[in-house]
Length: 248
Ligand code: 9D3
Image (cartoon, rainbow, N blue to C red):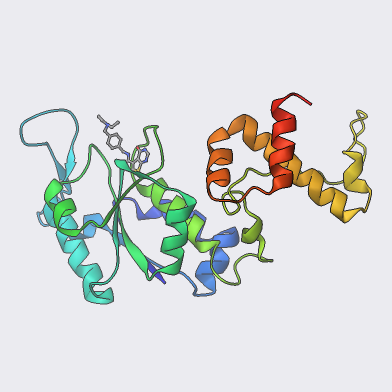
């Protein structure tokens, strides 16, 4: 799959693409990334890519023409089929279901906004998905684009060591409980839950499931409700949750 990223700040992407799990996806060729510096598509001698909004108001707007030219250059290389994503605070919040859909598809063209936004005519003509990360204010769409890339790259075959995304929270829809590693006993005397050292795999699995259910019920009751609606809670899960609710 291929991601083409239209941005004023291509340098922001380098460190992430060169490290860790995502580097494996990119180096292995599962995910191709091409950066399209918007400034190279400016039309005037000052290389302007933004201007004041018609009608007045604060801030600047990304100009339609450089964006249209950048999109034409991208499409000359990859054709018409790709989704075009605009990252904007007004978009639908990104979730794991959307990430899975991108991971199954051909990739996308990612438009990273800056300033107060981009000329609406570009959005109207080209954009197929508007995506937000959530209700806080960032300075542009570059970090959101990296977030989507990271989430998609780690789902590619051979990128993760094991089939570990089968066990991800948000794959089974619950938060994960606590994890512990060496040493068994810290110098200040804190140990590790006994059951994890027992070697009793069935008991360990049950304990982990209960930890996940308890944490999710406390922090994200909405996820418990969704799991219930979708039939992902067993009778044993329900029994545990009702004991929990009664404070036992
Ligand atoms: C004056 C109104 N502002 C909205 C709160 C305008 C505005 C602020 C920040 C317009 C764009 C931006 C830059 N942010 C993004 O481009 C962005 C973003 C975000 O700020 N939060 C969460 N997700 C995203 S995706 C793109």
